[in-house]
Amino acid sequence: MKQKMAHDDEWAYVYVIKNPSYNDVCLCAWDSVLYAGTPIVYETRFGLDLGIVVGPAPVLGKSYVPGRSDVHGACLHFSDEKEEDDVRYVSDDSAHQCDSCFCCQIAKEPEKMKVDGSVTWIDHLATPAEMSKYAENEDKEEEALRICREKIRKHELGMKLVTTHFLLGEPKVIFFFTADERVDFRDLVKDLVAVFRMRIELRQIGVRDESRLIGGLSVCGRDYCCHLMTKEMDPVTIKMAKEQNLSLNSMKISGPCGRLLCCLAYEYDYYMEEKAGCPPEGTRIKLDRELWRVSEINILSRKITLSGSEGRTLQIPFEEILYNSDTGYWEVSEEYQEEIFSS
Image (cartoon, rainbow, N blue to C red; front, side):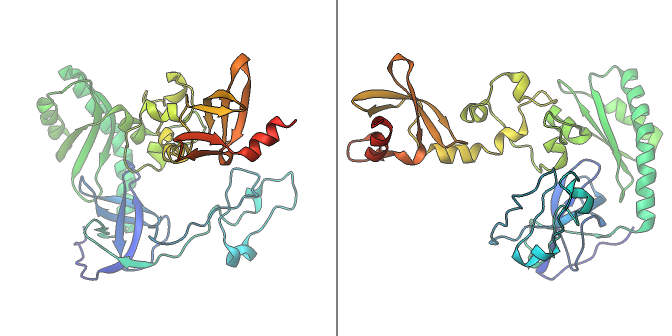
């Protein structure tokens, strides 16, 4: 195995690196340009292992460039005015745009940035011999799973083996398992060392981590977020579903892991920011000499539903309801009141 390189330069190209075996994502630096898909060897929390370059790390301070709004398929085209000429469109409306698409996302050139202590340096680029070894390790992992499961049954341990992984850069095999309680696996480790003749590490994980390692398709038809793109398993609460007016049926808002869907957290901050400028549900608003109650706040349509007597309802746009700091009450603009009550 190659020796680690010493890097004294504070400026380098920083890339998003993903481990294909257990889906860890991190930032790594290198002194030259690399492109998506390049295999590298880097220091993980378990030891030296293979990683794949996902792309250059986002540069702070740069403005957001939105995607195209006129796509008619699952593909998204990202471009700016300078790159407009490079985009090729499908002339036949019945054809799928991917048939003539140059790329789902235009590749951005990496830029050098200042590297601090939180960024790991890539040890070296993976060689053909290391890629061959990685493929051999993948073939051995199925057999390792079978052997470990036999040993677990032999010792009658209350644990579920999820997956295993042979490190590329070190003689070490990691077994990931779930368990409802603490497991004494010292005798199991002794048996595994006798079989594999290398370092053995058994790592207990949670049910969300199990989904992250194995992967699969969620209810939306896409890969699990935890498996595909999420770096950290952030907590998701039932409050997030309530604030977005989603069904509280656990079957509808839970993932295959049995925990709340990760995507419930994606728009939660936006909903809270928008609701901060609206009257809370239950607020009384005087309208046409009658008190109406705020019964619903629809963030997507940007309208507030007011409930009055005899089952009457009104939908008021966000911009027509203002807070009067002098009186301490929420009010509907006089112009809008004249518009809805004049007819």
